[in-house]
Image 1 (cartoon, one colour):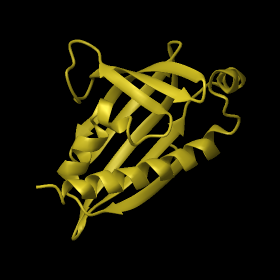
Image 2 (cartoon, helix red, strand yellow):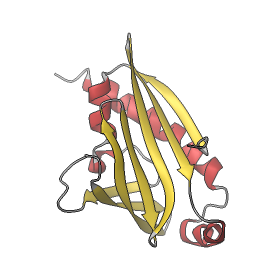
Image 3 (cartoon, rainbow, N blue to C red):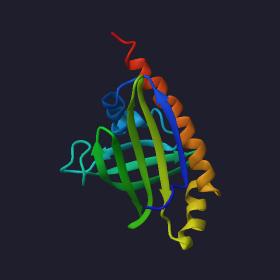
Image 4 (cartoon, one colour):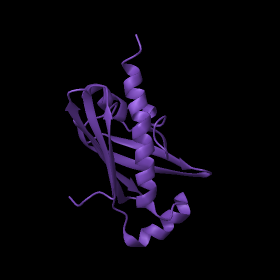
Length: 157
């Protein structure tokens, strides 16, 4: 696989299992992600599993768009999915979760898979001219919120 178009990581004071539960929770991730505003599993799927599909809703300002994603990895150390729009492969998103002595290290990565002809149309649909730079900022914000959420779980009794 080629290098991702955007990637960042964060050290989290929570277990890999706790973080996996957060990144694979469709409604919950909408609270942490910048553009992702929610999703639902497509029958017969009811949760994260390889091959499970979900519809994702995304929002940026007044712009709203939906995608269909297929889970490719669903294990405590990686949650990943391929994203399609208009029937075409447009992206891959991946969360790698590595246990550490103090919790885990989470790396979020994305690969832009849009065909070149689709990129100008994407600008109209999303309002984003430089998708790689925007995804980099979004990933950094998402990981900061994920860290707060995961570490907050450890302080709730």
